Length: 386
Image (cartoon, rainbow, N blue to C red; front, side, top):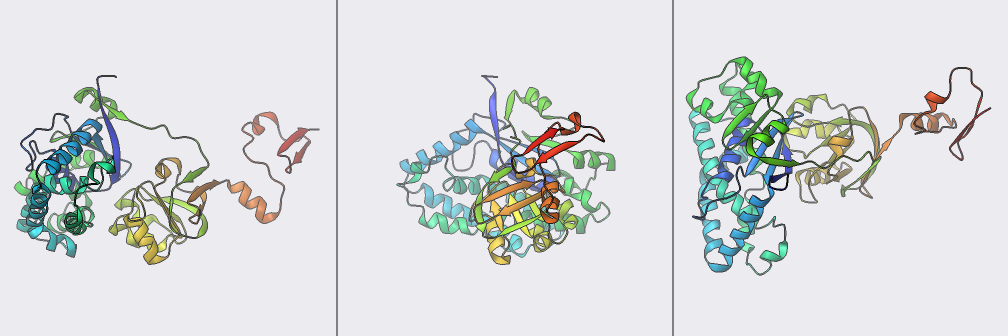
């Protein structure tokens, strides 16, 4: 295990396959357009589709290599950051007017859009890393004011570009419906559509890495194939999650996990929306939700911004909400303190009916049977067999 390259999940998004290909291939371009040096840690990115979303795992050493090289180039060449600003603006010239509208485009336009998007990603990545350094002190002495303005133009790039691609695929390949979302870029360009069974396999799950699409594999297969190790943090069986308040308020309700587009229409009025991170396409679900809880994000994330706009109590950055909570769980979202507490249904009913209640005994059903006479001391949380 010592010699295996480690891969850490940085985020999860329900993006269509061609969006993912543009992102992963673009950021994995070797060498990148802004340097002649080659990324030594490959595959740089491994994506996994599971649980109705896509998880992005990055090579930890690969990320450090990119960040250190960017800082080194910026310190050595005073024109380096200006070069990135200029190139990013050039790469945005065609795609930005399209993704900002979030409307379907024609097949010829889509082919060019995917090409330009992929070619732009090495430069977008370079720009983004300057603002997401693992150690912010590395860039403390760099002048990033103008680059920050350019970066602002890409705030919606990833989500909005995916929306454009999704809408376009549904319109162009209408006979496939949502299965068009798992078409590869080469299939879109050639219009050579694979059999339905292949598309169904992709829908149920896949990995994309080193420009290879792999279905029918699990993490352990991928680890053996590439000689890597996925860092998976154990999920603690805690009853309270902690994050950052994005919009204050306290709400109780039933959990509804929205991992991707397929759950948008499942959200009912007053439910608590739980997601890795919200995207603009989730708006119909957000409007119905009483509160929002996300794994990722900070005060400037999409969930935080939308929470303030719609005045929805919201806690972001809990890390494990989508893994710890399940549909139907009852939670209290305290977006004033930044806490999300899992509440036992029995406790709620007991409180409403004013009945003494003890929860979490673990083995009460093993100790007692029908007809046993017991004393319930709910003040002390004690059960006694009489």
